[in-house]
Length: 107
Image 1 (cartoon, one colour):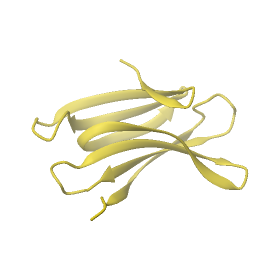
Image 2 (tube, helix red, strand yellow; image 1 turned 120 degrees about the horizontal axis):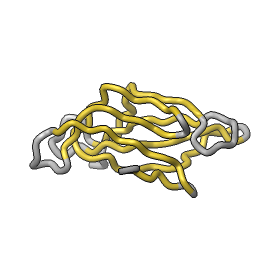
Image 3 (cartoon, one colour; image 1 turned 60 degrees about the vertical axis):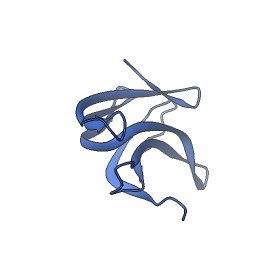
Image 4 (tube, helix red, strand yellow; image 1 turned 90 degrees about the vertical axis):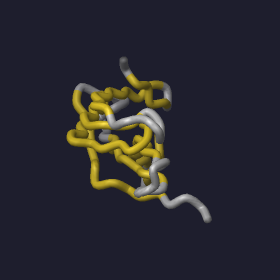
């Protein structure tokens, strides 16, 4: 059947695009519980009277967030992730910014 997608409890709100209005970052997991589960970072915001998705990015497999915040116009995620379904969990400190409608990971 179609993949199952679950909204995680992680939420962070702040201004990511400098317009003075807050955006919200969320984590979605595709096929939770599956070794091939994938985690996505999603940024959404109110535009007029509706919620719109501004950008999404694949974070990896088996992502676990210990800390998930927005500060300084950037999304900060501390936790662990696996690069693929066959590799071990590794600590992860990820920072993303929203640029031209895309989430860009800062190295």
